[in-house]
Amino acid sequence: MALIAHISDLHVGALAFHEELLNKAINEINEMQPDVTIITGDITENGYYMEFERAAWYLDNIETPMLVVPGNHDARHVGDQCFGELIVNRFDTLKLHKKGIKIIGLDSTEPDLDYGKVGRTQQKFMQIELEKAQKDNLYSIIALHHHIIPVPKTGRERNVLSDAGDILQSIIEGSANLVLSGHKHMPHVWIMGGTTFATAGTASSLKLRGKEFASYNTVEINEENIKIMLRSANGKHRILAEYENNCKVIN
Image (cartoon, rainbow, N blue to C red; front, side, top):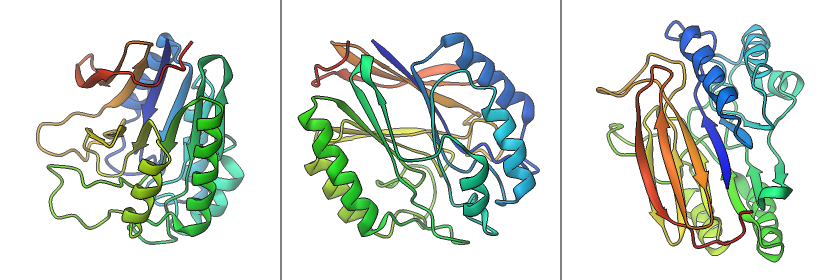
């Protein structure tokens, strides 16, 4: 069995940032002892150096292997340079050898813009890494900030990837098992062509839609099934998706 924690949209430095919620979420994750924690961007509000310093301090309290990708807020005000300097566990690839899992991180941000783009260079990188994962019989996970498929209950769609169609095609053809993203502060799961697309809410911002609450996701993977749970630091939880595991690579 493998257990993955998925956090997104911390927004450290924003007026709506709630430190207590983030600390509770981190404490819960440490108690669960997942195999890895994946953070899908917007760890800061404005991309300022001091915000990154503070965000890095919170992330240092997570006691698991970690992969962090940047979000559009992190790419503001030359924030990509701050991210590269202060966030050590940044995007690339991460293998959990004993669990048979490969995580591929992508930077979907454009400087000072809210919309996202993966681009041809990263698309090719992703395709190659997915091919390697298939050859090695690994369960493959893609992590990026911007959602690839529009998320319900988020109003007019303005911030989907500009190259979403091409990236979606590469993901489906590459038989990626799971795609994790954030951005819209609205948890949701789509399943398409054998690939699951799971969007996390915000872990510590009070900018919430409707009756949603600050939350993060966990992904439980075993030989028989996969369960994606929505969890909050206040004890609320619900199942976002539960389905059969068709990739028998989990130890």
